[in-house]
Amino acid sequence: MEESLTTEQKIIEAAEGVFLTEGYAGARMQQIADRAGINKAMLHYYFRSKDKLFELVFRHKMKQFVPQIALTLQDDQLSFLDKLDRFVMAYLEMLRKNPSLPLFILSTMNRNPDLMVHFKIEVGQMVVQVMKDEISKGKIRPVDPHQFMLTLVGMCIFPFLARPVFMGIFNLNQEAYAAIVAERHLHVMQYARAILSVS
Amino acid sequence: MEESLTTEQKIIEAAEGVFLTEGYAGARMQQIADRAGINKAMLHYYFRSKDKLFELVFRHKMKQFVPQIALTLQDDQLSFLDKLDRFVMAYLEMLRKNPSLPLFILSTMNRNPDLMVHFKIEVGQMVVQVMKDEISKGKIRPVDPHQFMLTLVGMCIFPFLARPVFMGIFNLNQEAYAAIVAERHLHVMQYARAILSVS
DNA sequence: CTTTGCGTCAACCATTTGGTTAAATCGTTT
DNA sequence: AAACGATTTAACCAAATGGTTGACGCAAAG
Image 1 (cartoon, rainbow over the protein chains, first blue to last red):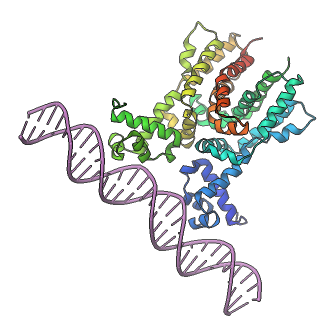
Image 2 (cartoon, rainbow over the protein chains, first blue to last red; image 1 turned 180 degrees about the vertical axis):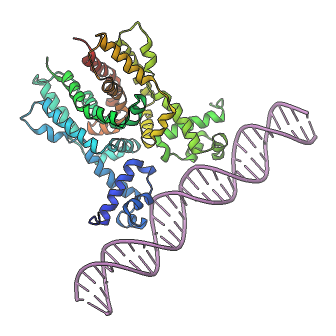
Image 3 (cartoon, helix red, strand yellow; image 1 turned 120 degrees about the vertical axis):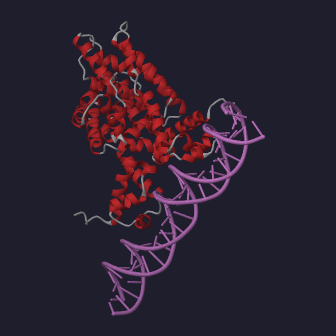
């Protein structure tokens, strides 16, 4: 079936699954080995330690998590709001495919904020610059870019973080919550338009 | 100094601190004992097991976390938006005092969604009902209450979840981020007004 | 004074966990 | 087919971890 996968790939795949759902402290090397269908010693043969393996997984997942909004913003043809629309659509779709990604990243980063150092990220500064330009050009209303991005990205991510809590509080079943997530895009853009649109 | 605290209280306080920052899997009974300044055996003397102690802490923290918006909504004197304003103010203040509460709750609930069963919460249904009433009375614009509450509460909580990531992405220091959090209330209400206000 | 029961502790225990090792197996080259 | 390096495995190890035990202190009750 998946015999085409190399052992190293099988390990990484298994490690991602286990680390994502259990977190670093909750993950067990044996569990990863079982899931990969190999001997526990292989883990240490290919990746020296639990830390090394985790770091590999984390780096990979972090790249997925940090919004690649930079690419979307490059396109000069579109208006800023249309660029946002594209980004929100793509980001929500990615999250739907990786629903446990946000909690994994945020938990890890809270436990060890130093990890951020390894990621020289310019996307933040870039977005702020673009927004300031748009504001000075009068294309969008003046808004604190930090607050705006915090809200915009949060609106996308939060439903995946709070899923069990909200399902409980609002008495929702799987389908009802899936419907909310499916409609999320509309409400995110409704927010963006309400805040940014020049009357 | 704090010799007035009973041993049981010292344990609970220490357990809260450790569980909040380390999570269940990452917390060590020895660590809790050290922090409480007592012997490890005392933990098992007062609370049979790690699970029992954790459950106690979790229940306590869960009560703090679930927005007590119900109380705020009762007051009939205020308009709906003023009620929201009160709630957002109070909730943000609580979060500022308990910055690691959200990640703790959401992590735990994701790991074990069954825990929600223990909390018979009616606040969700109540908020939905109030909003529907306001809508039918024409006091606020028609909005999906679920989407709205998800956004409103998310806007409050998310800054505390994403703190290290956003500090990294936007190159912010402690003070800069604190300033964003301090100003958060304004932007949350700006959202609420933009979405709910009848023109 | 002695007994009783709660609180406290050091020492101990069984299991789990990350990690190691030495032997075996497989594939490729000569 | 011998040799050789890469891969895989079972068995093992030391440390850590949640949990237990028996003794000791001590204040209140008898």
